[in-house]
Image (tube, rainbow, N blue to C red; front, side, top):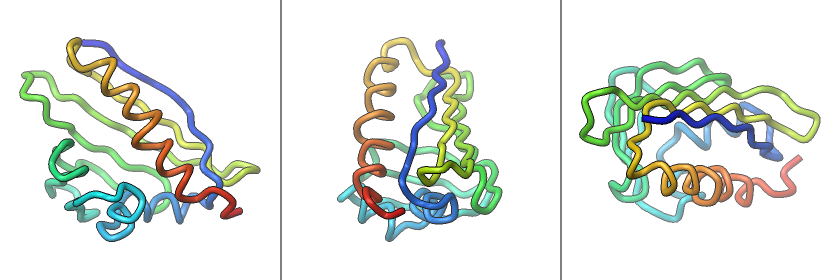
Length: 127
């Protein structure tokens, strides 16, 4: 199962990007869909009205989010998002491991368009 790593630039401070990724109401604003999220290790989450589900593993306020995404496979599919200050706002470092082969194209396109593309659009011009 392949891995995916990419950097994204979001024109908002890391603290705002972190809140947008971990606060239910803000997630619903930028995704325009139902979400369940609580920034507590061990809690389960659901994004895009259940299209993405998993378990929150670790949070470092304003800096890092680690989640396990459920695909029904035996190996854990782990998403690690690190937030770094950048002159344009935030540099997001994404690493997604063990993506099922049959979902790789859809998942990587989703990261670019629906996930961080939508978040970038949400914060466009914030800085």
